[in-house]
Image (cartoon, rainbow, N blue to C red; front, side, top):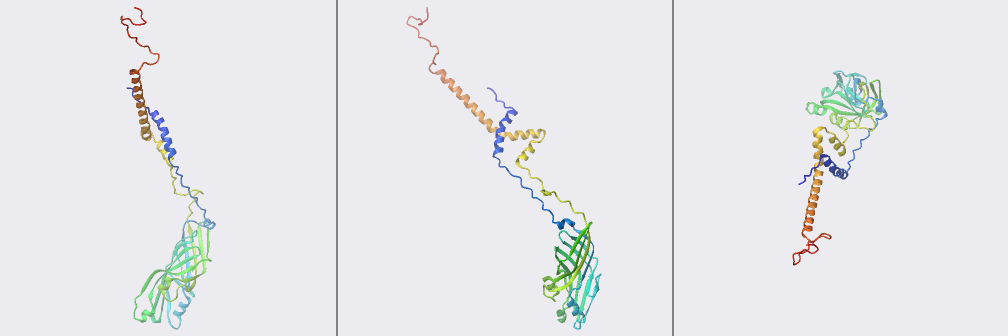
Length: 327
Protein backbone atom coordinates (compact mmCIF):
# COMPACT_ATOMS: atom_id res chain seq x y z
CA UNK A 1 0.00 0.00 0.00
CA UNK A 2 1.13 3.51 -0.73
CA UNK A 3 1.68 5.49 2.44
CA UNK A 4 0.19 8.96 2.73
CA UNK A 5 2.80 11.49 3.89
CA UNK A 6 1.86 15.11 4.47
CA UNK A 7 4.72 17.50 5.07
CA UNK A 8 4.56 20.31 7.59
CA UNK A 9 4.50 22.78 4.72
CA UNK A 10 1.55 20.92 3.18
CA UNK A 11 -0.26 20.90 6.50
CA UNK A 12 0.33 24.60 6.81
CA UNK A 13 -0.98 25.07 3.28
CA UNK A 14 -4.08 23.08 4.12
CA UNK A 15 -4.55 25.09 7.29
CA UNK A 16 -4.50 28.44 5.50
CA UNK A 17 -8.11 28.22 4.27
CA UNK A 18 -9.28 27.14 7.70
CA UNK A 19 -7.40 29.93 9.41
CA UNK A 20 -8.66 32.50 6.92
CA UNK A 21 -12.20 31.23 7.38
CA UNK A 22 -11.95 31.50 11.14
CA UNK A 23 -10.55 35.01 10.82
CA UNK A 24 -13.36 36.04 8.50
CA UNK A 25 -16.00 34.59 10.80
CA UNK A 26 -14.51 36.16 13.92
CA UNK A 27 -16.32 39.38 14.85
CA UNK A 28 -14.18 42.45 14.70
CA UNK A 29 -13.79 43.93 18.18
CA UNK A 30 -13.16 47.62 18.10
CA UNK A 31 -10.65 48.98 20.54
CA UNK A 32 -12.28 51.33 23.05
CA UNK A 33 -11.73 54.95 22.23
CA UNK A 34 -9.29 56.72 24.49
CA UNK A 35 -10.99 59.62 26.21
CA UNK A 36 -9.40 63.00 25.69
CA UNK A 37 -8.15 64.83 28.76
CA UNK A 38 -9.97 68.10 29.39
CA UNK A 39 -7.83 71.20 29.71
CA UNK A 40 -7.49 72.90 33.10
CA UNK A 41 -9.34 76.16 33.56
CA UNK A 42 -7.39 79.38 33.10
CA UNK A 43 -7.41 80.08 36.83
CA UNK A 44 -6.25 76.60 37.75
CA UNK A 45 -3.45 76.86 35.19
CA UNK A 46 -2.14 79.98 36.87
CA UNK A 47 -2.18 78.35 40.31
CA UNK A 48 -0.25 75.38 41.63
CA UNK A 49 -2.12 72.10 41.12
CA UNK A 50 -0.69 70.53 44.26
CA UNK A 51 -1.76 71.55 47.77
CA UNK A 52 0.33 74.33 49.25
CA UNK A 53 1.81 74.10 52.73
CA UNK A 54 0.67 76.98 54.92
CA UNK A 55 3.62 78.96 56.28
CA UNK A 56 1.61 81.72 57.97
CA UNK A 57 -2.07 82.14 58.81
CA UNK A 58 -4.04 84.43 61.07
CA UNK A 59 -7.70 84.56 62.07
CA UNK A 60 -9.43 87.64 63.50
CA UNK A 61 -13.01 87.32 64.69
CA UNK A 62 -15.23 89.04 67.25
CA UNK A 63 -17.36 85.88 67.77
CA UNK A 64 -20.74 87.55 68.44
CA UNK A 65 -20.91 91.19 69.49
CA UNK A 66 -24.29 90.88 71.21
CA UNK A 67 -23.04 87.91 73.26
CA UNK A 68 -19.96 89.84 74.36
CA UNK A 69 -22.18 92.77 75.33
CA UNK A 70 -24.42 90.46 77.37
CA UNK A 71 -21.48 88.88 79.20
CA UNK A 72 -19.86 92.23 80.05
CA UNK A 73 -23.14 94.06 80.71
CA UNK A 74 -25.06 94.80 83.88
CA UNK A 75 -27.09 91.59 83.75
CA UNK A 76 -24.48 88.84 83.53
CA UNK A 77 -21.72 91.00 85.03
CA UNK A 78 -19.21 88.59 83.57
CA UNK A 79 -15.97 88.63 81.61
CA UNK A 80 -13.81 86.55 79.30
CA UNK A 81 -10.23 85.42 79.20
CA UNK A 82 -8.08 84.20 76.33
CA UNK A 83 -5.76 81.21 76.65
CA UNK A 84 -3.24 79.00 74.89
CA UNK A 85 -2.10 81.56 72.32
CA UNK A 86 -5.36 83.31 71.51
CA UNK A 87 -5.42 87.12 71.77
CA UNK A 88 -8.00 89.86 72.30
CA UNK A 89 -7.90 93.45 71.12
CA UNK A 90 -11.22 95.28 71.19
CA UNK A 91 -13.41 94.35 69.49
CA UNK A 92 -11.99 91.07 68.14
CA UNK A 93 -10.23 87.91 69.21
CA UNK A 94 -7.22 86.69 67.31
CA UNK A 95 -5.61 83.36 66.51
CA UNK A 96 -2.15 83.50 64.94
CA UNK A 97 0.20 80.80 63.68
CA UNK A 98 -2.27 78.60 61.83
CA UNK A 99 -0.91 75.43 60.21
CA UNK A 100 -2.24 73.20 57.46
CA UNK A 101 -2.54 73.15 53.70
CA UNK A 102 -4.51 74.88 50.99
CA UNK A 103 -5.01 73.99 47.34
CA UNK A 104 -5.69 77.16 45.34
CA UNK A 105 -6.66 75.19 42.22
CA UNK A 106 -9.68 73.68 44.00
CA UNK A 107 -10.06 76.18 46.87
CA UNK A 108 -9.95 73.33 49.39
CA UNK A 109 -7.87 72.69 52.50
CA UNK A 110 -7.71 72.90 56.28
CA UNK A 111 -5.93 75.32 58.59
CA UNK A 112 -5.91 74.72 62.34
CA UNK A 113 -5.31 77.28 65.11
CA UNK A 114 -4.58 76.83 68.82
CA UNK A 115 -6.07 78.86 71.65
CA UNK A 116 -9.43 79.54 73.22
CA UNK A 117 -11.77 81.95 75.00
CA UNK A 118 -13.40 81.31 78.35
CA UNK A 119 -16.66 83.23 78.90
CA UNK A 120 -18.21 83.41 82.40
CA UNK A 121 -21.12 85.30 83.95
CA UNK A 122 -23.86 85.31 86.55
CA UNK A 123 -21.40 84.71 89.33
CA UNK A 124 -19.94 81.67 87.59
CA UNK A 125 -23.23 79.98 86.76
CA UNK A 126 -22.68 80.61 83.04
CA UNK A 127 -19.48 79.00 81.78
CA UNK A 128 -18.74 78.65 78.05
CA UNK A 129 -15.44 77.92 76.35
CA UNK A 130 -14.79 78.11 72.60
CA UNK A 131 -11.38 76.96 71.39
CA UNK A 132 -9.10 75.56 68.68
CA UNK A 133 -10.75 76.95 65.55
CA UNK A 134 -10.19 75.11 62.27
CA UNK A 135 -10.84 76.65 58.89
CA UNK A 136 -12.19 74.11 56.39
CA UNK A 137 -12.23 75.39 52.82
CA UNK A 138 -14.94 73.56 50.88
CA UNK A 139 -14.49 75.01 47.39
CA UNK A 140 -14.66 78.39 45.66
CA UNK A 141 -16.35 80.97 47.89
CA UNK A 142 -17.18 78.58 50.73
CA UNK A 143 -15.68 77.61 54.08
CA UNK A 144 -16.66 76.59 57.60
CA UNK A 145 -15.16 77.41 60.98
CA UNK A 146 -15.02 74.43 63.36
CA UNK A 147 -14.80 74.97 67.13
CA UNK A 148 -14.40 72.95 70.31
CA UNK A 149 -17.26 74.05 72.56
CA UNK A 150 -17.77 73.16 76.22
CA UNK A 151 -19.56 74.53 79.24
CA UNK A 152 -22.57 74.52 81.53
CA UNK A 153 -25.73 76.24 80.37
CA UNK A 154 -27.12 78.80 82.82
CA UNK A 155 -30.47 77.01 82.95
CA UNK A 156 -28.74 73.78 83.95
CA UNK A 157 -26.64 75.58 86.53
CA UNK A 158 -29.75 77.19 88.09
CA UNK A 159 -31.32 73.74 88.25
CA UNK A 160 -28.30 72.44 90.12
CA UNK A 161 -26.81 70.47 87.18
CA UNK A 162 -23.19 71.51 86.77
CA UNK A 163 -22.16 68.72 84.38
CA UNK A 164 -19.97 70.10 81.60
CA UNK A 165 -21.00 69.29 78.04
CA UNK A 166 -18.22 69.03 75.46
CA UNK A 167 -18.44 69.16 71.66
CA UNK A 168 -15.30 68.67 69.57
CA UNK A 169 -14.75 70.43 66.24
CA UNK A 170 -18.35 71.44 65.66
CA UNK A 171 -19.00 73.08 62.24
CA UNK A 172 -20.00 76.28 64.02
CA UNK A 173 -20.39 78.95 61.33
CA UNK A 174 -20.53 79.13 57.55
CA UNK A 175 -18.15 81.64 55.98
CA UNK A 176 -18.93 83.45 52.74
CA UNK A 177 -15.65 83.85 50.85
CA UNK A 178 -17.12 85.25 47.66
CA UNK A 179 -14.95 88.36 47.96
CA UNK A 180 -11.77 86.58 49.05
CA UNK A 181 -8.67 87.29 46.97
CA UNK A 182 -6.26 84.47 46.06
CA UNK A 183 -2.96 85.01 44.25
CA UNK A 184 -0.07 82.74 43.32
CA UNK A 185 3.40 83.48 41.95
CA UNK A 186 6.87 81.95 42.11
CA UNK A 187 5.76 78.92 44.09
CA UNK A 188 3.82 80.85 46.74
CA UNK A 189 0.13 81.49 47.36
CA UNK A 190 -1.76 84.07 49.42
CA UNK A 191 -5.41 84.26 50.41
CA UNK A 192 -7.02 87.30 51.99
CA UNK A 193 -10.63 87.59 53.16
CA UNK A 194 -11.56 90.82 54.95
CA UNK A 195 -14.75 90.98 57.03
CA UNK A 196 -16.23 87.88 55.41
CA UNK A 197 -19.85 87.26 56.53
CA UNK A 198 -20.55 84.35 58.91
CA UNK A 199 -23.78 82.60 59.99
CA UNK A 200 -24.31 79.95 62.67
CA UNK A 201 -25.08 76.42 61.48
CA UNK A 202 -27.56 73.81 62.73
CA UNK A 203 -24.68 72.05 64.49
CA UNK A 204 -23.53 75.32 65.99
CA UNK A 205 -27.00 76.00 67.37
CA UNK A 206 -27.19 72.47 68.84
CA UNK A 207 -23.89 73.00 70.68
CA UNK A 208 -24.26 76.66 71.68
CA UNK A 209 -28.01 77.04 71.94
CA UNK A 210 -28.29 80.82 72.18
CA UNK A 211 -28.93 81.76 68.54
CA UNK A 212 -31.12 80.20 65.86
CA UNK A 213 -29.49 78.60 62.78
CA UNK A 214 -28.76 81.19 60.10
CA UNK A 215 -28.24 84.01 62.59
CA UNK A 216 -25.41 86.30 61.55
CA UNK A 217 -22.29 86.23 63.72
CA UNK A 218 -19.44 88.73 63.51
CA UNK A 219 -17.56 89.02 60.21
CA UNK A 220 -14.22 87.25 60.06
CA UNK A 221 -10.87 88.25 58.57
CA UNK A 222 -8.48 85.59 57.28
CA UNK A 223 -4.95 85.93 55.92
CA UNK A 224 -3.03 82.92 54.61
CA UNK A 225 0.39 82.45 52.98
CA UNK A 226 1.82 79.20 51.69
CA UNK A 227 4.54 77.55 49.66
CA UNK A 228 3.53 75.31 46.79
CA UNK A 229 5.20 72.31 45.20
CA UNK A 230 5.83 72.30 41.47
CA UNK A 231 2.72 71.12 39.63
CA UNK A 232 2.81 67.71 37.99
CA UNK A 233 3.16 67.81 34.18
CA UNK A 234 -0.08 67.71 32.26
CA UNK A 235 -0.73 64.60 30.09
CA UNK A 236 -0.65 65.15 26.34
CA UNK A 237 -3.96 66.00 24.74
CA UNK A 238 -5.88 62.99 23.50
CA UNK A 239 -4.24 60.53 25.87
CA UNK A 240 -5.36 59.17 29.18
CA UNK A 241 -2.64 58.51 31.80
CA UNK A 242 -2.14 55.10 33.39
CA UNK A 243 -4.17 53.29 30.74
CA UNK A 244 -2.77 50.30 28.90
CA UNK A 245 -3.81 49.80 25.25
CA UNK A 246 -6.23 46.92 24.82
CA UNK A 247 -5.02 44.22 22.44
CA UNK A 248 -7.45 42.94 19.82
CA UNK A 249 -7.75 39.21 19.09
CA UNK A 250 -5.71 39.73 15.91
CA UNK A 251 -2.92 41.46 17.83
CA UNK A 252 -2.94 38.68 20.40
CA UNK A 253 -2.63 36.04 17.69
CA UNK A 254 0.27 37.90 16.06
CA UNK A 255 2.01 38.24 19.41
CA UNK A 256 1.63 34.51 20.04
CA UNK A 257 2.92 33.74 16.58
CA UNK A 258 6.10 35.71 17.26
CA UNK A 259 7.24 33.37 20.05
CA UNK A 260 10.62 31.70 19.44
CA UNK A 261 11.93 28.14 18.92
CA UNK A 262 9.94 25.16 20.19
CA UNK A 263 7.17 27.35 21.49
CA UNK A 264 6.60 28.59 17.94
CA UNK A 265 6.59 25.03 16.54
CA UNK A 266 4.21 23.78 19.18
CA UNK A 267 1.99 26.80 18.69
CA UNK A 268 1.93 26.28 14.90
CA UNK A 269 1.03 22.59 15.19
CA UNK A 270 -1.61 23.29 17.82
CA UNK A 271 -3.06 26.11 15.73
CA UNK A 272 -3.44 24.08 12.53
CA UNK A 273 -4.26 20.74 14.14
CA UNK A 274 -7.94 21.42 14.59
CA UNK A 275 -8.50 22.76 11.09
CA UNK A 276 -6.24 20.26 9.36
CA UNK A 277 -7.73 17.22 11.10
CA UNK A 278 -11.06 17.72 9.38
CA UNK A 279 -9.44 18.46 6.01
CA UNK A 280 -7.13 15.40 6.13
CA UNK A 281 -9.97 13.13 7.24
CA UNK A 282 -12.07 14.31 4.33
CA UNK A 283 -9.21 13.72 1.88
CA UNK A 284 -8.64 10.20 3.20
CA UNK A 285 -12.34 9.35 2.90
CA UNK A 286 -12.47 10.66 -0.66
CA UNK A 287 -9.29 8.73 -1.54
CA UNK A 288 -10.62 5.45 -0.13
CA UNK A 289 -14.03 5.81 -1.77
CA UNK A 290 -12.47 6.50 -5.14
CA UNK A 291 -10.15 3.47 -4.83
CA UNK A 292 -13.09 1.24 -3.99
CA UNK A 293 -15.13 2.56 -6.87
CA UNK A 294 -12.23 1.98 -9.24
CA UNK A 295 -11.76 -1.61 -8.00
CA UNK A 296 -15.48 -2.38 -8.40
CA UNK A 297 -15.51 -1.04 -11.96
CA UNK A 298 -12.49 -3.19 -12.99
CA UNK A 299 -14.02 -6.39 -11.60
CA UNK A 300 -17.26 -5.83 -13.46
CA UNK A 301 -15.41 -5.30 -16.75
CA UNK A 302 -13.42 -8.61 -16.45
CA UNK A 303 -16.38 -10.91 -15.76
CA UNK A 304 -18.87 -9.39 -18.27
CA UNK A 305 -19.39 -9.44 -22.09
CA UNK A 306 -16.45 -8.81 -24.41
CA UNK A 307 -15.78 -5.29 -25.15
CA UNK A 308 -16.24 -3.89 -28.63
CA UNK A 309 -13.31 -4.69 -30.95
CA UNK A 310 -11.74 -7.37 -28.74
CA UNK A 311 -10.75 -10.69 -30.45
CA UNK A 312 -12.99 -13.75 -29.77
CA UNK A 313 -12.07 -17.48 -29.77
CA UNK A 314 -13.96 -19.49 -32.47
CA UNK A 315 -15.44 -22.88 -31.62
CA UNK A 316 -13.68 -25.91 -33.31
CA UNK A 317 -15.46 -27.81 -36.16
CA UNK A 318 -16.42 -31.52 -36.19
CA UNK A 319 -13.17 -32.56 -37.81
CA UNK A 320 -11.23 -30.79 -35.11
CA UNK A 321 -10.14 -27.87 -37.20
CA UNK A 322 -10.58 -24.30 -36.37
CA UNK A 323 -12.36 -22.14 -38.86
CA UNK A 324 -10.16 -19.65 -40.59
CA UNK A 325 -7.01 -21.60 -39.62
CA UNK A 326 -5.17 -23.63 -42.21
CA UNK A 327 -4.32 -27.15 -41.24
